[in-house]
Length: 478
Image (cartoon, rainbow, N blue to C red; front, top):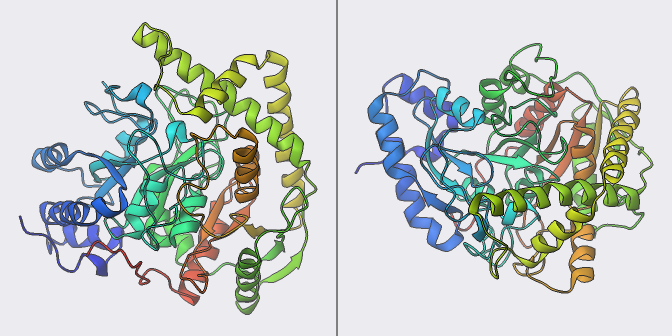
């Protein structure tokens, strides 16, 4: 096998350009990605399923002439089905669940020319913000192996941060793209609700809170991938206005001067870690230096009611997933099927009534309307991704039976992201700040519903002003 020694010098768009010009082959890129996986994965545990033979077969069969033709790619082991391969959802309950069809988004990845050669680690059912499933063990942060790379797309973020791939599929139902991007020094965009398809098996995830896209090193890659995969499929329950121009063009052009609202306090009124405040203040100063107006402003939020609504919607969906799988297997729940927090969430879900579920969805949509009004004044909302820098592995443990401590830790660590899953707005984590100990602390920017263009434009401007793609984690695959 021969790889490609200059792999690190290009983002995914750049690699695809080399393939198109026949400067490198898809086989060489795949060999390089596989070699990097074999070299670094034993240390970080990012890739849990290796589909090397399937990837080689796809190349041999002939790749479509898409914008990412020949680029190695990883998908998350959660909902995104790939024909003939196992998708476990990070759970022993699904350890033998083999897909007999592709997800709609998988089809679009293939059409774009991406070469899918594996799946990345995720916590059970994507239910938490660190990636330590009992089924596969913890994924470790390439910046510090003692720390979490976030979740639930922690395997994806670790794979990108370690240099295995320049971008990887991820999904976000409460922060699961932005959180792992924030903790690994990568770029993560959660698109607008309905921007990417969830079919053919699901119309929505977690009542419309969840959506799939990607974590990447470059803004350009992230924008170009959304260009290649966005748009509704027949029967989708949500539709968002198509972009005015390709997102990749937005990423290449500076935005007009923006009015940015800055906010750091947690929704419950408590103060986050000092490093988090430093990161937001630093981002605000950078934005001001680029000609944007930044001022303190916020939307008043009932944090307790937000938390109740989230639990109601996620718990009901968890109960359905568990019960449907048990019906498929034709048996009752057994010891070892589920982690402790998942089991509790399913039990809560079975107690949710119809009125409870409707009330939670109404809260969600009213929150969306309040932020829509807010964005009539402000273009962008600037706040932390997390309430503190990356936590050490084992801190947030889904097997813990101390439910109160677990819940309090989760709320203190990740209080900001979920509200934008409820509103459906596009929201991104940008890697602009590292602590003195060398840990990344991402900063979150959110725009009005449907306005990824402004975010990509701002992200591209920030990237040009303070480049991050060449920063190398201590644990790098090359």
